[in-house]
Image (cartoon, rainbow, N blue to C red):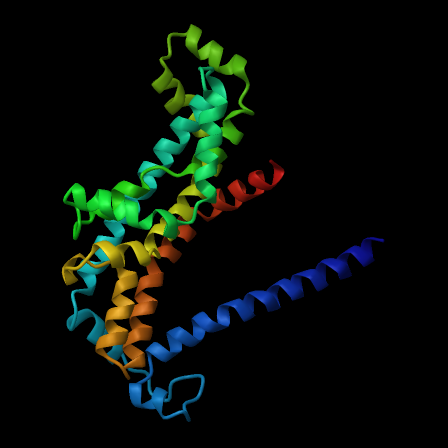
Length: 274
């Protein structure tokens, strides 16, 4: 029985390793293509590995366009949105999970109902409100509509409900206020969930293309998803430039995932248990 289990685990490991290699293959191809010359790519006879590695694509991206500025724009908006989403989600989830007030169930249902509305439906009203506030062509136009996540509120509520009420009552008897109770007791207990939510929020904000395309017109206000379109439109045949920009865009997301990897996996595991 033990030997059979070892064989079964080996087969599962081999299958998962093969699947991981298949999923990584497009990314590896993108990285290797960024090291090729454009002539080698468009010739159609190029091999998987570059015949002669070249950094010309990266030089074009960094010198011929304000790419660092675009990276900074995306980093600022993504970090602010992520931090604000984690704060509002945890605070709202705590209120819905541990406090009683009139209309609580109805309000929570309305929040969940917003998850079923596609962004394309509210895109025009959101733009009109943004224009009325004078925020068109401003990074605040990207940040303000994304400060609250209905999914984050729902997820936080589900986790905070499992925190024993006696623990919170004991803290109140010791003189802890609601904000201190939230920061010192509730937040550490839901940290794995917050880490998973933070990674998803950061990735969604970093990869957001449609809304920045609508509200941003100034080239120096662009974010990195728009940068790919810029290079694809300006350099119609410079595929190595496009690939180099794509590699640089994915680096921050990979770094964020590696930093919070343990908490992310733990959060997903606990989410599955829920």
